[in-house]
Length: 301
Image 1 (cartoon, rainbow, N blue to C red):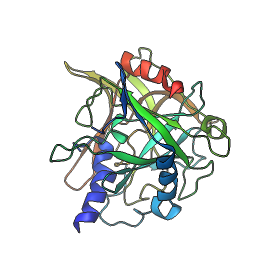
Image 2: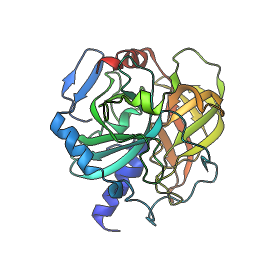
Image 3: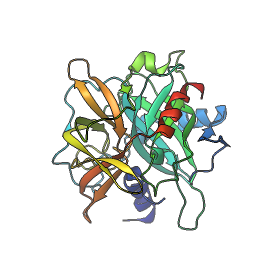
Image 4: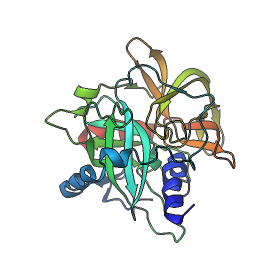
């Protein structure tokens, strides 16, 4: 495997599970770190992510094996769920999963922090995340609601980067497309920050970049999520086996198959993988007060 291909695969898969790859932010507040994307860079992101580029991993034999627990979602993509694309400079493409959530601007998507926080390379240089676009309802190259460029994104100042599993959450403010806000055209999923029981019946969604679909189709896992706490962090855990690319995907409770809606209580943050690239379990950070404040202010981005 050539080095360029290997690097692309590392970002597309490992980075999507919080690998040790922190982006240089353009602004910082006491309680959050905000990156503002210029109008020119938003236009460049739209030009970069052609339909052909979005499908670049299809048929890649070096991708992880097909999921055994996760299944292709057979129905319409649930409201607000979509695929998040980005480039980690110097030019390595990757993808995650994100979900539109209610906000005053109607422009906000929620995802994992490490999907927009690139961390540091092996020489301790910041990895800048650029070309960030969100495609709600993505399905085998189709963008039924349009391609929405990010005008800004933010994470809580309590999130220390991809090496950390605490507060691994981010909000993304998206430009309207054709005068339409993403929440109006794609719908939303509710989100909650209240205390939950230690086990929650959960459906998880994501776009795993594995051999079965190369990120082209939405997958789901229906598993109980259990809460585990230690002296450092509190996480939700399952034995779901969605591959990298599913990071940032919503963990929903009280899901209604008829409406396709539920309530987000976590998002995919980290996964354990075997030497063969098979995912054996996934975890998501439990929402904290700093993350709640991050979400509540997202409509101002």
